[in-house]
Image (cartoon, rainbow, N blue to C red; front, side, top):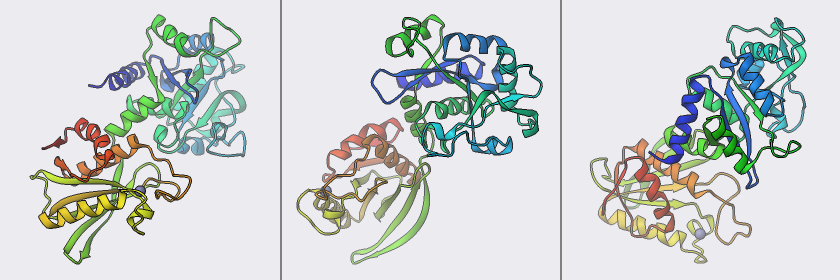
Length: 359
Ligand SMILES: [Zn+2]
């Protein structure tokens, strides 16, 4: 098993047992850290431990459905995709006193996680801040609240998770970062997992595409079989074109292509994209056997020589390609001779899934 998978699994085991984990991430190199645990596991002692080592601004990550059911309006009507966009009006559970003590906050947190809780059972404003996470969790938005909720869900807990920013002990006016995070986790025997590792784990273990359409594609050399795939998270769509009798039992010639409008459609020779695709297709037609996975990265139009080149993540696209192959039941393949560098990039992803490269 990959080291990163082991780190995710350790975090899930801790979550399932009601223990806290350290989530790391952030845009800069010196990662920030959050202490997180399943909301249903909140106790006065666990909240007191959290308050002692964090900013004390305890948030509870919740799915949109829970925020609607519990009438938790946004705290700020701005950009919903920003970190602040998900924050809801703070609440206290009706059974609490001032609402701020560790015991009171633990009760509020558990109540937020309970399916039987009702909107009227919470006072507003209070001392625990609910946060609505993006649809799709870390695959919808790579934020700490999404990571905390994903971990709770994957651990089999109710869909609600506490998170709070760890502060530095060495520099009490700053946040806990980098090496100090690792030190803190080791000292308290807490598993550490990064948002990136969790996203990669989910991309490897959960199907990333669904079939959107299945069509016969008439061609001057016969009929191809075209299957359109839609990404489960995000709005990308991709195409698999099956030529001839490429079946699961054989070692299927495979060509993975990333859309290049200028070359694919207009025949520009400023790059090799279109030439490689045509050559692979001609070869497959001649043999009456092959599979082309045509990837269309989401976002702006992509074509070499169109100025600002739309970026695409080879890692993300590799996962998509591997899931398409698995959906098609193609487990053994030969990379086509015309496969450009990208073919090699997906090689690793394909092998990770137990798919085999022949020849
Ligand atoms: Zn190109």
